[in-house]
Amino acid sequence: MRKYTAIFRMRYLNVIQYRAAALGGAATQFAWGSMEILAFLAFYRANPSNFPMEFSEVSSYIWLQQAFLALFMMWFWEADIVKNITDGGVAYEMVRPVDLYNRWFFTITANRLARATLRCIPILLVGFILPSPIGLSLPPSLPQFGLFLVSTALALSVVAAFAMLVYISMFYTLSAMGTRMVAAILSDFLAGAIIPLPFFPENIRRVVEFLPFASMQNMPLRIYSGNVSGSDAIRGIALQLFWLITLVFIGKISIKRALRKVIVQGG
Image 1 (tube, rainbow, N blue to C red):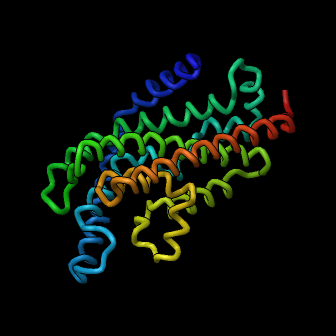
Image 2 (cartoon, rainbow, N blue to C red):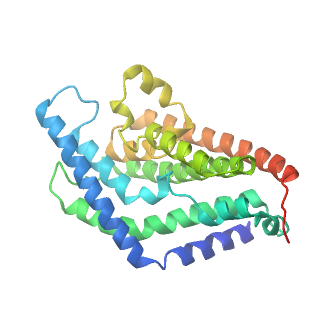
Image 3 (cartoon, rainbow, N blue to C red):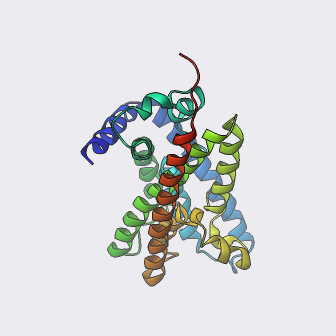
């Protein structure tokens, strides 16, 4: 385990050096989050009733979504991993005395966590400064915040496990672009990145909430805002743990089969 911890630490320290890029990304995310909140505000003012979330919950959801976008966004892919698969560099990875799945998994989580660390602070500060109800509110209670932290860690792990399945699928395709685009669009929509899941039609929402995508950003953001609490939050975290174990299990079996059949040409 120590070697994977070292991999995580090295990748984290390497990525966290790019402060200027992070500030530029934070400014973009702040602008996008502001537009989203104003759009929802227009809908709430036009029809103040019959909404599945309080407007303050929506505001907290969006600010946290933007602050921790790097943790959850599925349209961000590890260029090094994609390059290793497509140009044959994976041959060098296979001779190293580490498990390839674990190495890539820890690399993904370290990169995402480093990017989120740099971007979240200015967005959270501005979000807390803004007045209610458009600003970022504190969680309803300290235990609720604790559940949020646990759910966030599991959500990041589920995102990494799902991303691993996408990378493994690239061993069987001539071009990685199509797989990445389909995975990004599908997962972002079903994870609540575009519209929070409570706004989905009831029949569709009941199905979507049991899919692995709902165990990504949907659960921690709704727990923090107070939209999901108590036993519902515990069940949501249990579902996240289930999908994490399931996706990792499928990923480990899949990568073993892919590596047994991989062919690298060149010299």
